[in-house]
Amino acid sequence: MNDYHIHTGRCGHASGEMRQYVERAMEKGLAEIGFADHLPLLDRRDPSLTMSREELPLYIEEIDRLRREYPEITLKTGIEADYLPGFEEETAMLLDYYPFDYVIGSVHFIGSWGFDDPREKAGYSGKEPLEVYKEYFHTLQKAARTGLFDIMAHPDLIKKYDYRPSADVSDLYEETARAFSEAGAAIEINTAGLRKPVSEIYPHREFLETCRAFGVDLVFGSDAHAPEDVGRDFDLAVSLARDAGYDTTLTFTNRERRPVRIEFGGGSVA
Ligand code: ZN
Ligand code: FE
Ligand code: FE
Ligand code: ZN
Image 1 (spheres, rainbow, N blue to C red):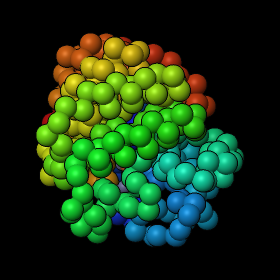
Image 2 (image 1 turned 60 degrees about the vertical axis):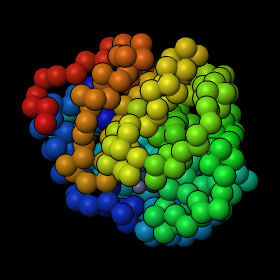
Image 3 (image 1 turned 120 degrees about the horizontal axis):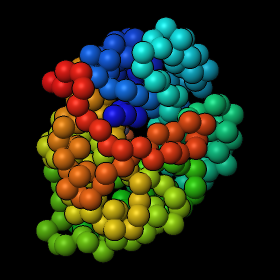
């Protein structure tokens, strides 16, 4: 079982040493993990959101050191990169420059609004939920279509503060699943939603089923920002995945994917 979405203290809003995340993964019996800390934002400098560009090579070196130190676990070099319209080429250059095993693409911004940032929660007030959802999912579709990303992170992050339209959003799920499928981007089951006001895994079950119907591959991530969150609630993630019809997940090396059976168990699953 892989946990492909693990942050580090370098992003300015996560705690613990990188080795603590690795040790926690081994305690949980995970066979493979990947760090996917936030790629420096290319349109600003905010040390509370990401590492600096100068730190990026140090992040990669530290993963390499830990890989040598902990041969008992497979450790991958990932990154979580924001989709920033207008910065596609610069993003591509940065992603190509470093030896990433996989790139997780994220939409954390609608225009300049950081809608999942607790400091920008006021941005929801006075907006029509369905309109916000449309903007979010359309942005996510564009993100996938850039082809920059192997995996799309927390694919319905817009629900984070339990902000949901009353209308049916099946059309948005379908359009988005189609965009992922056409772009060859996998989807992420991300358990961090359980630790947020929405108290629900990303994505919603119906969205996951739609992705499955469109042949979109699946990856698991805890989005750990603290060592104790590594592999957290993966029992729930696995049953959700199975219920949606998935029996394989992916492993990535040098941005090449390979399907592997979803296997959970072994080790102490807390
Ligand atoms: Zn983060
Ligand atoms: Fe994210
Ligand atoms: Fe993340
Ligand atoms: Zn995230």
